[in-house]
Amino acid sequence: MSDKCNYFKELIKDDLAGELSRELQAELHEHLESCQACSREKDELARVFEMMDRVEDRPVPGHFFVYEQPRMSLLQMLKNLAPASRWAAAAVSAAFICMFGFVLMNVHIQYRDSSLLVAFGNPGSLQAEQFLQEKINNAVNDARAEDRVMISRLLEVQNQQVNAAFRNLNQKVDVGFNQLENRFADTVESSNRRLKNQMDLNILQYGEMMKAQQQTDLLKINNRLDQIVLEGRRRDTRNQTVLTTLAQYGITGSRSRGAIYD
Amino acid sequence: MESVIPRQVNPAVFESSQESAWVRASQAGDNGAFNRLVLKWERKIYNLSFRMLRNPEDAADSTQEIFLLAFRNIRKFKQNSHFSTWLYRIAVNHCIDLLKKRPVAELTDDGDLEGSGLGIRASVTGTQEKDLFHDERQRKILDSLALLPADQRIVIELKFFQEETFDVISKILEVPESTVKSRFYAALDILKDRLSLRAEEIL
Image (cartoon, rainbow over all chains, first blue to last red; front, side):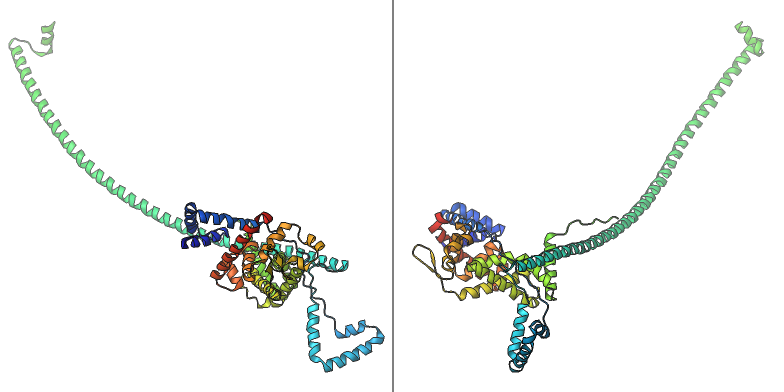
């Protein structure tokens, strides 16, 4: 097996452990297709992982629990003793305190330790078990109540964040709208101005055109009028000639015409 | 505009903020909060102890001692990592300390474990054994783990059973990630060889 394969053997292990990057995975797959030794190695290692997957967690045999018992004072401890032995105990502990102060310190610390009710495994008696169970139930209930408080607090925070985001967004939208409105007004005004200019220009051009047209028409009308006047004059002359001729033949007035045509 | 109210809290966010709240309360002297941390992690710690020590009684004792250590030192925890990382560090160190006090296990010719500490048979009687392992196969798999040196076994434990990443394991063990990886590779090679030796019994 080459150095290259040693490199890939590590990649195989990383891959099975779920800690191989996508790029290296691709590189590994490419190698596995061409290298039988490595692909056999991979199968063998996969069986190790498969084996480990079969290991099941064991249930805990009991609960570890911290409970600080109320401290009992030395006086109370003495009171709990039988009256006869009380004074003896007091005397002994007084001597004890005087002589072995440092020992008492240790005792004190141990006492503090033993005030932690620490249970793991069988608590021993039914009473202790019930006590523990009650404590655990209380703890679980407390935890649930605490969860609810925590959830509502987190929701509040999330709400605040969302609302802040919304306010921010609203402001941005408002600004955007204002900008749009301004730009729109500008656009309308400028396009109006352009239109007006265009129309003015058009009107001017149209006026010019009309004026030219009118002049052409006027010229035509004048020409026509001239022609009509000439034609009228020509007819007048002809009529005059006819009248003169008729007068030579003694026919005058409108009757004569009737006479001719009758 | 109408605001949208999120109906669900991100579970990961919830869990981590809940846990750090418990840690803070524990540091302020709230035993109830510490008990909640215990309830959350006791199964993991007990099973870690069990797989490291290979004995239910030792595992229960070790779990108790680990939580007691955590309880006494919770004020020293600065919350600069996850609580689990800190707790695992205590657990791992405690288990390694216990293992160091035990005699070293030796492999006999037929591949069985011999030695007072690691072989389960040595510490419990035959009738107890049946109760302790509900499945003979589980015992065989755990036996194969017992072959590994403690430092490799810890890495296998954290990687396979506690499902931590190499990065987190290096923080728990306080060694470089490369060390974690090389221990993991070496452990896998040992397990692979052992498996090919006794595959028909284990699988």
